Length: 155
Image 1 (cartoon, rainbow, N blue to C red):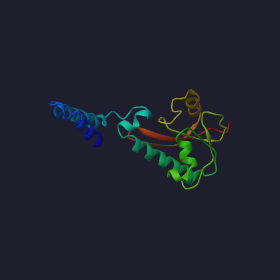
Image 2 (cartoon, rainbow, N blue to C red):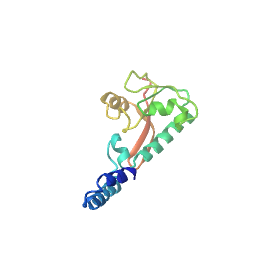
Image 3 (cartoon, helix red, strand yellow):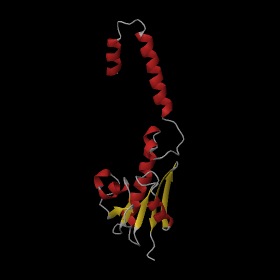
Image 4 (cartoon, helix red, strand yellow):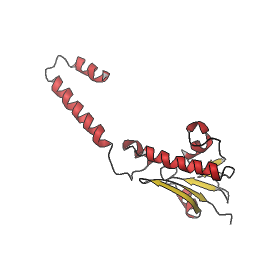
């Protein structure tokens, strides 16, 4: 609002300014209104553009609470943002920090892998190969946003 007022003040000497500002306002409002609706299959960096972020948070919260309840002492490999979710109670996903490591580094056999396609290493070939050889423990999905827990076999 302040920006619109300042722009109007600057253009007040021009007679067509009101029509220009009205047109610009309509265009911006349409972009914001219709730009927030889209196909919910975009990669993680598009989450904020269509409010998918709330679905991602819900799946991640369910996964983090599952890990905290059922696997509180087991090593967990994950990528950003899941490492921060599991390591910092102040983020609101867990109550006590869980032992973690980076999924794109060395992951010992028997570890759990906390994976989401929207994570920082969602399309990393090393991480994808790691989960393809792991056993699915549990998976959560809300409108196309997923979080999953895998176990890397002890063999």
